[in-house]
Amino acid sequence: MTSYLNYFGFGGDKASSGKAVDGLPAKQSPVRALPATWYTSPEMYEFERRAIFTRRWLFMTHSSRIKNAGDFLRFNIAGYDVIINRDRAGNVNAFHNVCRHRAYPVVEKKEGNANIFACRYHGWSYGLNGKLAKAPGYQDLEGYEKEQNSLFSIHVKVDINGFIWINMDAKETPEVPWEEHFDNVDKQERYSEFDFDNYELDHTYEIEGDFNWKILADNFNECYHCPTTHPDIPDFINLETFDSDLKDGHIQHHCISTPEQAAKGLGVASTYYFPNTSMTVSPHFIMVQKFLPSSPLKSTMSYEIYRNKHSSEEDFHLISSMYARVMAEDKVLCDQAQKQLNVGVFVNGQLHPKYEKAPLFFQQTVREIITGHYKREQEAGRQIWPARREVVDGVSRERFLEKLHKDSTAGKEVPNTIGESTEISNAILETKETSTTTKTPADNPTLTEDNERPETECLICWSSPSLTLHCNHTFCFPCLDSYFTTHKSKHSCPVCSSPLFRPTLFTSENLNIWCNKLRTVLSIIILLLYFLRAISCACILPTSSILAWAKCSISAGNTINWIEIAIKEIPYLVVSVLQVWAQRKMVRMSGVEWAQGELKAANFVAAVGWVQKVGGMVWRVEMIIRMARRVG
Image (cartoon, rainbow, N blue to C red; front, side):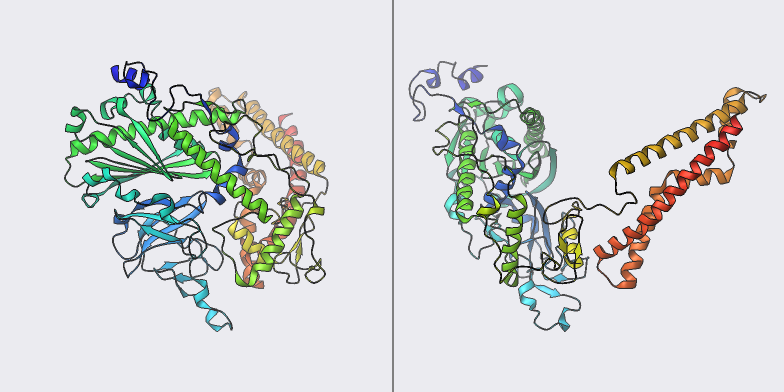
């Protein structure tokens, strides 16, 4: 209890004396946190993908996990699929997990060993150094440069302790050097008592969370909540001496262990590496924790637990199991906090300038990076994606598509997640942001006569002939096929995102709705008549009522009736199998791309489906008349 009182400034120690503590004034004011929309907005999440996760250096794992040539690990950070491997020369490499042909992932396991990276879509293969080894059929094409189609490489840094960092900036030299934020972070004085070569991976595990990644970062970087939510903590950490040193790009948490804690080897050195990784080191174990966002409201808590080779089972499990319990408790805290942020009532709270100074520092760093990137995009007049690779012969095409995107979103108000109308403390943000809306078409540059695209050509590659979608945008089949391959969840126009519908018999949506309602009603009537038939038969049979009902329920219709019902009452099973078969046949017979075969198959199956649907209606009416006569 004394340590609790001292931690919160009621124990009669220096923290409660009213004098300056750690250089802070005696009286301070609470500081406003980031607005709730920064934890819920899809627009903000996309900004973070552009401004943070592809520009800053990311702490990933330890090189001992890929000891042998061919060993690889796969990570997903904010939607970016990354491979880290060791090649035959012993070098540690990192690549985007995307084939240069049609964007299929070249690695589908989370970890393993491979002699070569082979894409199972079209058979392209790459060496362990990322260079293209084979592209079937392309050796016969003139002008195809094999050297220009290696895997997209990612910058790698292995620090003095063997930990691997990556930077996804597409430039030859990253715009943000590692030393700018992490110089000598691997040479901390407190690391001198640890020999990192004595640690080996014991196990890994993941916890899926329904929260924004910054919620977990805020939570990890303060122990204000520890006395109330983590009953194990006081036995392992001396809260009376807990403090955080705020460095550029990282936060060092430290405390002075009690003699009892030191005797058990419970002293820890914890560092948070911006943006999304922490490492906790103790004499018996190392815990690397990564906060891996997958959407604005979902994140994965990824853990790598390393064990000291010289530690006993008891010593290792004592501290590792404690941290596992704490992480599980934090998961509940973050889930519940995110739920309330999603409601829309809470805007932002006031954080304590001492006990929550590390979360404030983290939030200030996020704000500065986001606002800085936002200003750069405003000056450039476009979105800036540092990880995006430019295709030499496709620069003009990319610019054209950006103009199409501007035209398609013109006039639509963009949610203002950069500048909030709430009161933000000047301690975090000294600049005032204002709401923004997308420019009108008149503000956007227009196509000149020299590069104006004819209406009948594909919007992407400008080839002809092309297919006109329901929204009147035109594309060729290869471009549509490539788009749908890389956006499997999207069956929509690449420009305006309007959904693509399969052909239907009725052009009126109301007619389709009433047709489906009628079909449902007729099906219910048929089933009711079958039950009535069974009940009427049961009343005149000498056996028990339950057995009679069961018997007559089965015998109410003959075998052909039940087969007929199975086929006609579940048409989707038949139609879907038919469509797959028709699609494969059309692709093989005509040699077209898969998307074109799918469209042709859809037209064919839609026609068959409507014939079946009309026939089914007639059959249902016939069944109602037939069964009504039987019941009567």
